[in-house]
Amino acid sequence: MNIIKISTDLELTIHEFLIGSYQKQNQFLRELIGNHCELYERVKPRRLYTEFQMKNNVTNIAGQCVSMLVDEEGGLKDNEVNLIGSYLYETDIHQQPIMGNILFVGERWIGGEVDFCGIDETVFKYLEQELNQMIYSMKRAKEAFGK
Image 1 (spheres, rainbow, N blue to C red):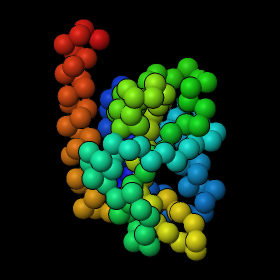
Image 2: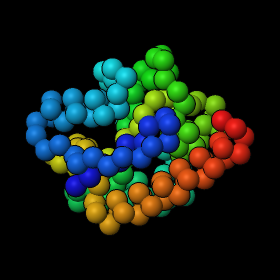
Image 3: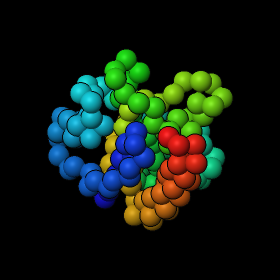
Image 4: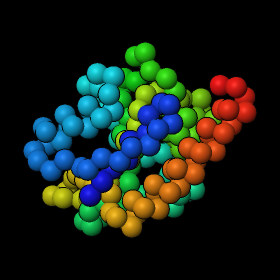
């Protein structure tokens, strides 16, 4: 199963979720986020669930629930604002931007804990389509303003 990365320059890339130990998975996720990410944070951005209708409650079915991973120290580094992440996180309301690259990962409930995984294929296709439409709109807006 796959996960989605969106960079600060509005590029969407698809990556296969690494199967292996938690240590290897965590290293893989930190490297994908980039910019020397040492600690990532699980974020449940409201608009991911209200506008994209993603499931917000983790179940034992792998990848039906989706969350966003961000660099915990992204605001302390030389990172740019992630427009997609910031919009989904409602930065326009509370003024706390998401800085740096972001990942969308699946979740599942195992042994009383949330475990990250790839995103369910049906959920993935829908989320990828919605994110690509949002990226297209944001790129067009940036072009219109000469940025």
